[in-house]
Image (cartoon, rainbow, N blue to C red; front, side, top):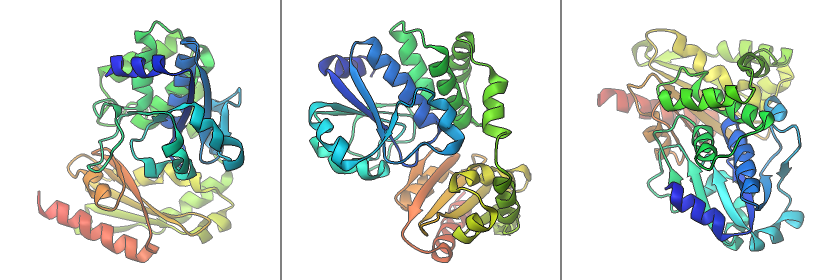
Length: 324
């Protein structure tokens, strides 16, 4: 697969990088590393994402390389460029950038999620990797590229974000090997931890208080459910992205095997996050709703309201538990 990627890179002169919408630390970190890889190979590159970088991750892009999608400004670029889609193999997951996919000269995916059954895009998809940043660091090493400290920090941030600071089940020796390479480039682990976990607003703390108050247990106490409504965001003075880690809190309880968080963004759009201790493959559940992810971490967007989405996903999780 690496040979195919390098052949793809060598075939074209100009590239556009994008990731899923909204971008997270792994997608952004992978973009930073691939931008460095492409420049190292003497290519032109631009990073164009559907939306702005979430506030929590702005520090990952000190040179302001990431551009926010603008149809008037960016559409024509795709006719002259190949597209590298990072941290997702689902063209429906990249927001309005999807509209110009048919105009791109070619497309290659680099991802570590379980491939969706109906996905039509090919590339380097390694579901054994803990993060796309893990793959990106391995590729940089394979071509003897030494990452600068800012790029290394972005990659390390994506790595720890997608592994829960090396706690999730997909963390392997590969993960620590990549992390070591990044620390050797000058990354300070506590600096990244501080930026991700000790840098939230008071609004985020108030939002967490409200969301935890909605906690309910199902399936004999093995399934935990939390709900965040758009009114909660406004009342707390928080951002949608501030709720990212709330899904993990119920898993502190030994009896809870699956955690569900239903979130409503300020526009009223509903999303569902799923986490598991491994007994239930939440990626399979998310795929039935048009989403995807990993065995232990997945999610999907819903066209239904909070109540309808919650009812459907609880039934699906309970069905999977009954089949075990």
